[in-house]
Amino acid sequence: MSPLALVTGITGQDGSYLAERLLASGHAVHGVVRPGSRGVTDTRVVAHRADLADTAALTGLVRDLRPDLVVNLGGVTSVAQSWMAPDLTHAVCGRAAVALLDAVEDLRRAGHDARFLQAGSAEMFGDAPTSPQDEHTPLRPRSPYGQAKAFAHVATVRARERGAHASTVILYNHESPRRREQFVSRKITAGAVAIAHGETDHLVLGNLGAARDWGWAPDHVDAMVRVLHHPDPDDFVVSTGLSHTVEEFAHAALRYVGVSDPAAVIRVDPTLVRRHDVAVQVGDSTRIRTRLGWRPTKTFEEVVAALIEAELVRRRS
Ligand code: GDP
Image: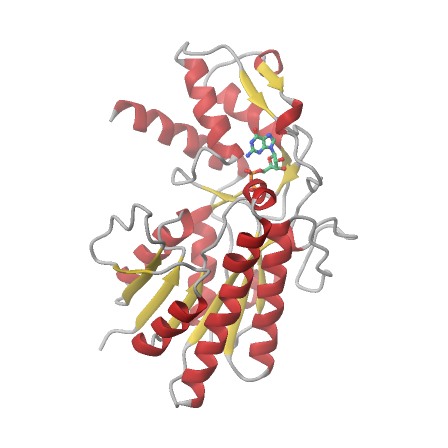
Protein backbone atom coordinates (compact mmCIF):
# COMPACT_ATOMS: atom_id res chain seq x y z
CA MET A 1 0.00 0.00 0.00
CA SER A 2 1.33 3.45 -0.84
CA PRO A 3 1.85 5.82 2.09
CA LEU A 4 -0.98 8.28 2.58
CA ALA A 5 -0.42 12.01 3.07
CA LEU A 6 -3.11 14.38 4.34
CA VAL A 7 -2.37 18.01 3.43
CA THR A 8 -4.25 21.11 4.53
CA GLY A 9 -3.87 24.12 2.27
CA ILE A 10 -3.60 21.85 -0.76
CA THR A 11 -5.10 24.48 -3.08
CA GLY A 12 -2.45 27.06 -2.23
CA GLN A 13 0.96 27.66 -3.77
CA ASP A 14 2.89 25.35 -1.43
CA GLY A 15 0.12 22.73 -1.32
CA SER A 16 0.14 22.33 -5.07
CA TYR A 17 3.93 21.93 -5.25
CA LEU A 18 3.93 19.56 -2.28
CA ALA A 19 1.16 17.42 -3.78
CA GLU A 20 3.22 17.05 -6.97
CA ARG A 21 6.31 16.02 -5.01
CA LEU A 22 4.45 13.50 -2.86
CA LEU A 23 2.55 11.99 -5.80
CA ALA A 24 5.83 11.63 -7.71
CA SER A 25 7.33 9.66 -4.81
CA GLY A 26 4.40 7.25 -4.68
CA HIS A 27 2.20 8.75 -1.97
CA ALA A 28 -1.56 8.78 -2.05
CA VAL A 29 -2.34 12.47 -1.50
CA HIS A 30 -5.49 13.63 0.25
CA GLY A 31 -6.20 17.32 0.67
CA VAL A 32 -8.47 19.34 2.90
CA VAL A 33 -10.42 21.76 0.73
CA ARG A 34 -12.57 24.60 2.07
CA PRO A 35 -16.28 24.21 1.25
CA GLY A 36 -17.17 26.70 -1.45
CA SER A 37 -13.60 27.06 -2.74
CA ARG A 38 -12.74 26.14 -6.30
CA GLY A 39 -11.08 22.89 -5.22
CA VAL A 40 -8.07 20.99 -6.51
CA THR A 41 -7.29 20.84 -10.19
CA ASP A 42 -5.03 17.79 -9.95
CA THR A 43 -7.36 14.80 -10.35
CA ARG A 44 -4.89 12.52 -8.60
CA VAL A 45 -5.51 14.35 -5.31
CA VAL A 46 -8.42 13.12 -3.19
CA ALA A 47 -10.23 16.22 -1.92
CA HIS A 48 -12.09 16.32 1.39
CA ARG A 49 -14.36 19.30 1.90
CA ALA A 50 -13.83 20.62 5.42
CA ASP A 51 -13.41 24.01 7.04
CA LEU A 52 -10.18 24.39 9.01
CA ALA A 53 -12.23 26.10 11.73
CA ASP A 54 -14.21 22.87 12.11
CA THR A 55 -11.90 20.98 14.45
CA ALA A 56 -14.25 17.98 14.71
CA ALA A 57 -14.12 17.54 10.93
CA LEU A 58 -10.31 17.68 10.98
CA THR A 59 -9.91 15.15 13.76
CA GLY A 60 -12.50 12.91 12.05
CA LEU A 61 -10.48 12.97 8.83
CA VAL A 62 -7.26 11.95 10.61
CA ARG A 63 -9.08 9.23 12.55
CA ASP A 64 -10.74 7.80 9.42
CA LEU A 65 -7.86 8.10 6.93
CA ARG A 66 -5.07 7.02 9.31
CA PRO A 67 -2.51 9.00 7.25
CA ASP A 68 1.23 8.37 7.41
CA LEU A 69 1.96 12.10 6.93
CA VAL A 70 -0.07 15.09 8.05
CA VAL A 71 1.13 18.41 6.64
CA ASN A 72 -0.51 21.57 7.91
CA LEU A 73 -0.12 24.35 5.37
CA GLY A 74 -3.63 25.76 5.44
CA GLY A 75 -5.07 28.93 6.84
CA VAL A 76 -5.33 32.60 6.15
CA THR A 77 -2.32 33.05 3.89
CA SER A 78 -1.53 36.72 4.05
CA VAL A 79 -0.43 38.90 6.91
CA ALA A 80 -2.54 41.79 5.59
CA GLN A 81 -5.67 39.62 5.52
CA SER A 82 -5.06 38.49 9.11
CA TRP A 83 -5.51 42.04 10.41
CA MET A 84 -8.99 42.07 8.88
CA ALA A 85 -10.01 38.72 10.42
CA PRO A 86 -7.98 38.03 13.58
CA ASP A 87 -10.44 35.51 15.11
CA LEU A 88 -10.70 33.50 11.92
CA THR A 89 -6.91 33.63 11.60
CA HIS A 90 -6.48 32.25 15.10
CA ALA A 91 -8.94 29.42 14.36
CA VAL A 92 -7.52 28.33 11.00
CA CYS A 93 -3.81 29.08 11.51
CA GLY A 94 -3.67 28.23 15.22
CA ARG A 95 -6.36 25.98 16.67
CA ALA A 96 -6.59 23.78 13.55
CA ALA A 97 -2.98 22.69 14.16
CA VAL A 98 -3.79 21.73 17.75
CA ALA A 99 -6.76 19.66 16.57
CA LEU A 100 -4.60 17.85 14.01
CA LEU A 101 -1.85 17.22 16.58
CA ASP A 102 -4.39 15.82 19.06
CA ALA A 103 -5.72 13.50 16.36
CA VAL A 104 -2.18 12.37 15.46
CA GLU A 105 -1.51 11.65 19.14
CA ASP A 106 -4.74 9.62 19.38
CA LEU A 107 -3.58 7.57 16.39
CA ARG A 108 -0.22 7.02 18.05
CA ARG A 109 -1.89 5.76 21.22
CA ALA A 110 -3.86 3.38 18.98
CA GLY A 111 -0.58 2.05 17.52
CA HIS A 112 -0.36 4.03 14.26
CA ASP A 113 2.56 6.45 13.93
CA ALA A 114 1.96 9.42 11.65
CA ARG A 115 4.50 12.16 10.96
CA PHE A 116 3.28 15.73 11.38
CA LEU A 117 4.70 18.86 9.76
CA GLN A 118 3.63 22.37 10.69
CA ALA A 119 4.32 25.23 8.29
CA GLY A 120 5.46 28.12 10.46
CA SER A 121 6.43 31.57 9.33
CA ALA A 122 9.10 34.22 9.82
CA GLU A 123 6.17 36.39 10.99
CA MET A 124 6.36 34.47 14.28
CA PHE A 125 9.58 36.35 15.10
CA GLY A 126 7.98 39.77 14.62
CA ASP A 127 10.35 42.52 15.63
CA ALA A 128 13.15 40.09 16.42
CA PRO A 129 15.96 41.40 18.65
CA THR A 130 18.54 39.59 16.50
CA SER A 131 19.20 39.25 12.81
CA PRO A 132 19.35 36.81 11.13
CA GLN A 133 16.82 34.73 13.05
CA ASP A 134 17.31 31.04 13.75
CA GLU A 135 15.50 28.28 15.62
CA HIS A 136 16.51 29.81 18.98
CA THR A 137 15.20 33.31 18.28
CA PRO A 138 12.33 34.19 20.65
CA LEU A 139 8.86 34.39 19.12
CA ARG A 140 7.57 37.98 19.33
CA PRO A 141 4.85 38.06 16.66
CA ARG A 142 3.25 41.38 15.75
CA SER A 143 0.44 40.38 13.41
CA PRO A 144 -2.55 38.12 14.13
CA TYR A 145 -1.06 35.83 11.47
CA GLY A 146 2.26 35.61 13.32
CA GLN A 147 0.50 35.10 16.65
CA ALA A 148 -1.64 32.22 15.37
CA LYS A 149 1.37 30.60 13.68
CA ALA A 150 3.36 30.95 16.94
CA PHE A 151 0.54 29.22 18.85
CA ALA A 152 0.61 26.31 16.36
CA HIS A 153 4.42 26.21 16.50
CA VAL A 154 4.51 25.89 20.28
CA ALA A 155 1.82 23.17 20.19
CA THR A 156 3.93 21.23 17.67
CA VAL A 157 7.06 21.49 19.82
CA ARG A 158 5.10 20.28 22.86
CA ALA A 159 3.69 17.30 20.90
CA ARG A 160 7.24 16.39 19.87
CA GLU A 161 8.33 16.53 23.51
CA ARG A 162 5.54 14.05 24.27
CA GLY A 163 6.99 11.67 21.67
CA ALA A 164 5.24 12.59 18.42
CA HIS A 165 7.18 12.77 15.15
CA ALA A 166 6.20 16.43 14.86
CA SER A 167 8.37 19.00 13.05
CA THR A 168 8.09 22.59 11.98
CA VAL A 169 9.50 24.53 9.08
CA ILE A 170 9.85 28.26 9.71
CA LEU A 171 9.33 29.61 6.24
CA TYR A 172 10.55 32.97 5.00
CA ASN A 173 8.81 34.53 1.98
CA HIS A 174 8.85 32.17 -0.96
CA GLU A 175 7.52 33.06 -4.35
CA SER A 176 6.49 31.37 -7.58
CA PRO A 177 4.22 31.92 -10.56
CA ARG A 178 1.51 30.24 -8.45
CA ARG A 179 1.51 33.12 -5.94
CA ARG A 180 -1.64 35.21 -6.03
CA GLU A 181 -1.40 38.89 -6.98
CA GLN A 182 -2.29 39.95 -3.43
CA PHE A 183 1.38 39.25 -2.63
CA VAL A 184 3.88 41.93 -3.49
CA SER A 185 6.08 39.70 -5.69
CA ARG A 186 3.30 38.90 -8.17
CA LYS A 187 1.93 42.42 -7.92
CA ILE A 188 5.34 43.81 -8.90
CA THR A 189 6.07 41.32 -11.68
CA ALA A 190 2.56 41.57 -13.19
CA GLY A 191 2.83 45.37 -12.92
CA ALA A 192 6.27 45.47 -14.55
CA VAL A 193 5.04 43.38 -17.48
CA ALA A 194 1.96 45.64 -17.84
CA ILE A 195 4.32 48.65 -18.01
CA ALA A 196 6.49 46.89 -20.60
CA HIS A 197 3.36 46.32 -22.69
CA GLY A 198 2.39 49.99 -22.44
CA GLU A 199 -0.82 49.25 -20.51
CA THR A 200 0.10 51.52 -17.61
CA ASP A 201 2.94 53.89 -16.81
CA HIS A 202 3.29 53.34 -13.08
CA LEU A 203 3.40 50.77 -10.26
CA VAL A 204 1.68 51.55 -6.94
CA LEU A 205 3.20 50.01 -3.80
CA GLY A 206 3.14 50.41 -0.01
CA ASN A 207 6.19 50.12 2.24
CA LEU A 208 9.18 50.19 -0.13
CA GLY A 209 11.66 49.83 2.73
CA ALA A 210 10.41 46.46 4.03
CA ALA A 211 13.20 43.92 3.58
CA ARG A 212 12.33 40.26 3.10
CA ASP A 213 14.27 37.03 2.64
CA TRP A 214 12.78 36.04 -0.71
CA GLY A 215 13.17 32.45 -1.83
CA TRP A 216 11.78 30.15 -4.49
CA ALA A 217 8.65 28.22 -3.40
CA PRO A 218 9.64 24.84 -4.91
CA ASP A 219 12.87 25.04 -2.85
CA HIS A 220 10.90 25.65 0.35
CA VAL A 221 8.63 22.71 -0.50
CA ASP A 222 11.74 20.60 -1.08
CA ALA A 223 12.74 21.54 2.49
CA MET A 224 9.38 20.22 3.73
CA VAL A 225 9.89 16.89 1.95
CA ARG A 226 13.36 16.54 3.48
CA VAL A 227 12.04 17.23 6.97
CA LEU A 228 9.19 14.74 6.54
CA HIS A 229 11.58 12.01 5.42
CA HIS A 230 14.17 12.63 8.14
CA PRO A 231 14.00 10.23 11.08
CA ASP A 232 14.54 12.94 13.72
CA PRO A 233 11.80 15.56 14.03
CA ASP A 234 12.86 19.13 14.81
CA ASP A 235 12.31 22.80 13.94
CA PHE A 236 13.99 24.16 10.81
CA VAL A 237 14.34 27.71 9.54
CA VAL A 238 13.98 27.71 5.73
CA SER A 239 15.48 30.84 4.21
CA THR A 240 18.06 32.08 1.72
CA GLY A 241 19.97 34.11 4.31
CA LEU A 242 19.80 37.29 2.23
CA SER A 243 17.21 40.04 2.34
CA HIS A 244 16.18 42.62 -0.24
CA THR A 245 13.79 45.51 0.10
CA VAL A 246 10.49 45.80 -1.75
CA GLU A 247 12.12 48.70 -3.63
CA GLU A 248 15.01 46.47 -4.72
CA PHE A 249 12.53 43.83 -5.87
CA ALA A 250 10.61 46.41 -7.89
CA HIS A 251 13.77 47.89 -9.42
CA ALA A 252 15.07 44.44 -10.40
CA ALA A 253 11.74 43.53 -12.03
CA LEU A 254 11.39 46.85 -13.85
CA ARG A 255 14.96 46.75 -15.13
CA TYR A 256 14.43 43.19 -16.32
CA VAL A 257 11.58 44.35 -18.58
CA GLY A 258 13.67 47.26 -19.88
CA VAL A 259 12.58 50.22 -17.73
CA SER A 260 15.73 52.37 -17.50
CA ASP A 261 14.62 54.59 -14.59
CA PRO A 262 12.56 52.35 -12.24
CA ALA A 263 12.25 55.01 -9.52
CA ALA A 264 10.38 57.25 -11.95
CA VAL A 265 7.50 54.79 -12.38
CA ILE A 266 7.05 53.69 -8.74
CA ARG A 267 4.40 55.50 -6.68
CA VAL A 268 3.76 54.99 -2.99
CA ASP A 269 0.20 54.80 -1.68
CA PRO A 270 0.35 55.37 2.10
CA THR A 271 -2.91 53.42 2.57
CA LEU A 272 -1.02 50.29 1.45
CA VAL A 273 1.56 50.69 4.22
CA ARG A 274 0.67 48.16 6.91
CA ARG A 275 0.26 48.86 10.57
CA HIS A 276 3.13 47.17 12.45
CA ASP A 277 4.90 45.95 9.31
CA VAL A 278 8.09 44.11 10.27
CA ALA A 279 11.03 46.11 8.89
CA VAL A 280 13.55 43.37 8.11
CA GLN A 281 13.24 39.60 7.97
CA VAL A 282 16.24 37.42 7.27
CA GLY A 283 16.71 33.82 8.32
CA ASP A 284 19.72 31.68 9.24
CA SER A 285 19.02 28.25 7.72
CA THR A 286 22.30 26.64 8.82
CA ARG A 287 20.49 23.81 10.62
CA ILE A 288 18.58 22.50 7.60
CA ARG A 289 21.57 23.06 5.31
CA THR A 290 24.00 21.10 7.46
CA ARG A 291 21.66 18.41 8.78
CA LEU A 292 19.42 17.76 5.76
CA GLY A 293 21.61 19.02 2.89
CA TRP A 294 19.00 21.57 1.79
CA ARG A 295 19.95 24.70 -0.12
CA PRO A 296 18.17 27.24 -2.28
CA THR A 297 18.55 26.69 -6.04
CA LYS A 298 17.79 30.25 -7.18
CA THR A 299 19.30 33.61 -6.32
CA PHE A 300 17.11 36.66 -5.70
CA GLU A 301 17.74 37.87 -9.27
CA GLU A 302 16.80 34.45 -10.64
CA VAL A 303 13.56 34.41 -8.63
CA VAL A 304 12.61 37.83 -10.04
CA ALA A 305 13.52 36.72 -13.58
CA ALA A 306 11.55 33.46 -13.27
CA LEU A 307 8.46 35.36 -12.10
CA ILE A 308 8.68 37.83 -14.99
CA GLU A 309 9.22 35.04 -17.54
CA ALA A 310 6.16 33.25 -16.15
CA GLU A 311 4.09 36.46 -16.52
CA LEU A 312 5.20 36.71 -20.14
CA VAL A 313 4.29 33.07 -20.82
CA ARG A 314 0.90 33.56 -19.13
CA ARG A 315 0.16 36.45 -21.49
CA ARG A 316 1.05 34.46 -24.57
CA SER A 317 -1.11 31.48 -23.62
P1 GDP B 1 3.40 38.68 3.48
O1 GDP B 1 3.84 39.85 4.27
O2 GDP B 1 4.12 37.45 3.84
O3 GDP B 1 1.92 38.51 3.53
O4 GDP B 1 3.82 38.93 1.95
P2 GDP B 1 3.53 40.19 0.99
O5 GDP B 1 4.14 39.83 -0.31
O6 GDP B 1 2.08 40.54 0.99
O7 GDP B 1 4.31 41.43 1.65
C1 GDP B 1 5.71 41.45 1.77
C2 GDP B 1 6.17 42.85 2.16
O8 GDP B 1 5.91 43.75 1.09
C3 GDP B 1 5.46 43.43 3.38
O9 GDP B 1 6.42 44.07 4.18
C4 GDP B 1 4.52 44.48 2.79
O10 GDP B 1 4.23 45.57 3.67
C5 GDP B 1 5.36 44.96 1.62
N1 GDP B 1 4.62 45.67 0.57
C6 GDP B 1 4.92 46.90 0.06
N2 GDP B 1 4.03 47.25 -0.87
C7 GDP B 1 3.12 46.25 -0.96
C8 GDP B 1 1.95 46.05 -1.76
O11 GDP B 1 1.57 46.89 -2.57
N3 GDP B 1 1.29 44.87 -1.59
C9 GDP B 1 1.71 43.90 -0.68
N4 GDP B 1 1.02 42.74 -0.56
N5 GDP B 1 2.80 44.08 0.10
C10 GDP B 1 3.51 45.22 -0.04
